[in-house]
Length: 134
Image 1 (tube, one colour):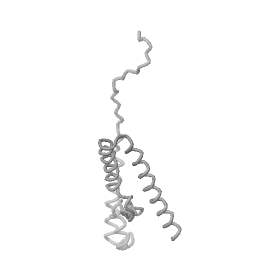
Image 2: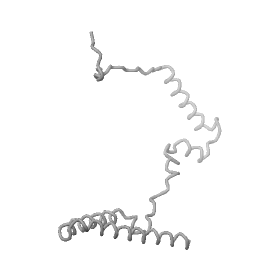
Image 3: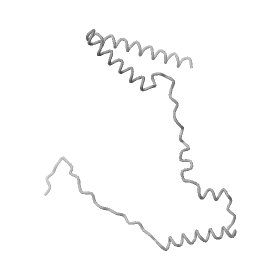
């Protein structure tokens, strides 16, 4: 008897194979049909096959698969779009904060916050100015 539990135990995986149906008569009939069709086309009794139709038979199934590919996106010319630049600014901020804390004390964090707000305001005003000019 199994006791109720809030944890779920794993059940063993069951082996389940689904057999494929193979019909040798049907396969032989398809092979004979395609062979006879090729012989009739070679003799010219079944109608002419143009070069275009022949190419359609042997074309790759991948044709058009990359039709919606839009290529590599162009990176913006903005300095802030570069992840390396953002990483460098964060590193510089942390190093400045640590050095300032050692030399000045906790007041450095207030100065860095003010400096960050001034830089952010300047950045957004320059973006605003660019969007008005366009």
